[in-house]
Length: 267
Image 1 (tube, rainbow, N blue to C red):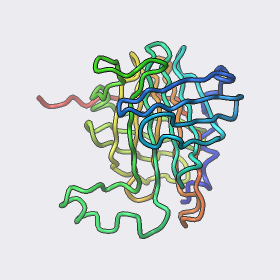
Image 2: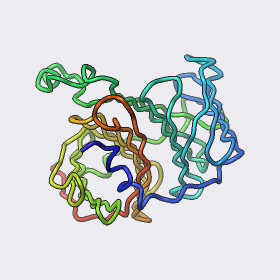
Image 3: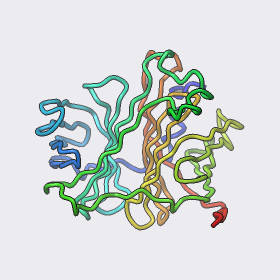
Image 4: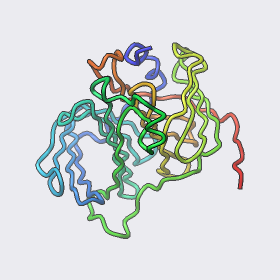
């Protein structure tokens, strides 16, 4: 099922967009030495410019979406006009003055898809149909050796969750370990389908986590924040529109969350 055909079902329980960032600007000082200026000109449009480090001078203007899962914590997402089929997702943590950037890219042709999964596995290559880069930054201050960052975590290992995106779109996730998870469609167009995918987990705040998954069969990358206090999610999926490598969709998504059980880990 092409993801573009069922995109609406993932948006119905999406967290409301916020205009709190409209008119503000932020300087992100990345660990790798890059400095990126973000100006959120209005509730829908931002501009970004690399002012130092690698890619200095690169920038662009883009439509963006922003949600606010916690006070002074924002999820900002936009497509890139300087790179094809590429998006940037930002977690702006204004409480701590830090940010995490997730750059996601999906293949532009069938030839770029993983063809021989067994060979890739034996050679230690990626099994996923895309590329993801994580970068940490401070906001408005130089990045130093002692700067705080959003850390990777195994807090979700063993949890089995149910996510309701709409009345006709319900999935469960099982977080297997620090590098893998399983999604399984319980209701909807993908009912009965499931996949074990590479996944990364970050702790953003107490009870607030970011998961990023990279699917194997289809060119899909998901970036989602899960709030275990509110039991809500906010995020996006970057996907090929019709599975023909002609178009791309960046789907806003959100769900009501329910923890079903936890499988204890072995010592």
